[in-house]
Image: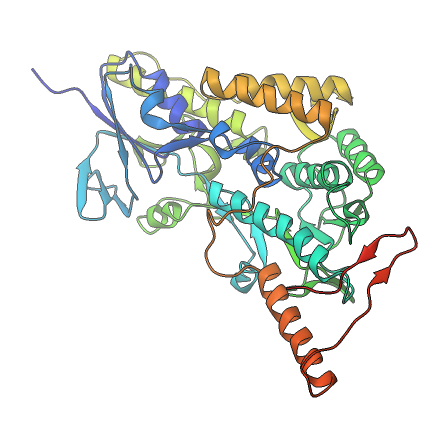
Length: 465
């Protein structure tokens, strides 16, 4: 008896999971490879970064998802290479052969050739990124509270979001809510509600993939939250002190990057073997989502470029999910000799949340916003979370935040922390300058600074140590 065909899936994102689930009864052996041991629900990653929910609520162990699917093996490993001719996937010092291959490795942040910007503008793709952003934002407020009695802190309380797509819009709305509501009574030397939030978008409008009316409504709502929205504006430089846009320099210690993504490095590996890539480096697909010249190799999700009705499909979770289901069915049809089909994405609408009780979206040509859109967004995202426990906890967290305006995950930790981030460097420099000023003020090395009293009677203590 011949062994069942071996299907290797690289990546346990939305597309990879759906492909594996679709083949749960297929006469195949499946190996699912991912560099982590969990599936990450990326649409809610920004809420981890904004301290709304805990990371465990949007991450779920891959093995638990497939514990009852007997035809699948899960491997936690980094894929280092693929040999299309020999049908081999390499994972460091181990290689496995495949009969069918599904590449679903997603995307990474793209800084448009400016690698030096990566250490100053934090992107949002992984849990580690979310921890770093949360740390940067919360430390910015803490550092401002510490330094406000002795120096201006406007640059600490200025937050620049580069990119006006769904992630940028959701980050801006959530950050406005965090500063205006959740933190409004927590500090004594600063007023978090005075924080300046600036969104920069190079296109003529924010949310470019959405209908124009949705973009207009989203911009109006952001402006009502106090967010400054700059469109048709391009960033020319980013450093530890701020952002340059044309002749204007914006002093800001916290910069968040939501402006561009690039396919994962595996696309280049395949491109070197003759696989056709588009201008952005994505794998160009056939009508059945296979790679030209390799009918047993498929690519889905953000790493792939599929043209439908003259336009490439957007890098959205529903696209990857439908592609994963289609490829799983296609492989099963190839094995069983059934007729093959062409893929067609069914657009069931798009939604983006802006803040408390507010979202924008469209279903077909129907545009809606406000509480109705927010409730639809909430329901769809909760239902797509993996695991009943996650759904219940997220619902309870959102209910708590809605009633109390509080964020339950406002903890500063070292998770995902690699080296000093800009706000920490800023604090170190400020303390050093202050010590130098004190030591040079008189021979004793000390300077007596009287307490400051603001207009509202609050006393500011100048000590920062």
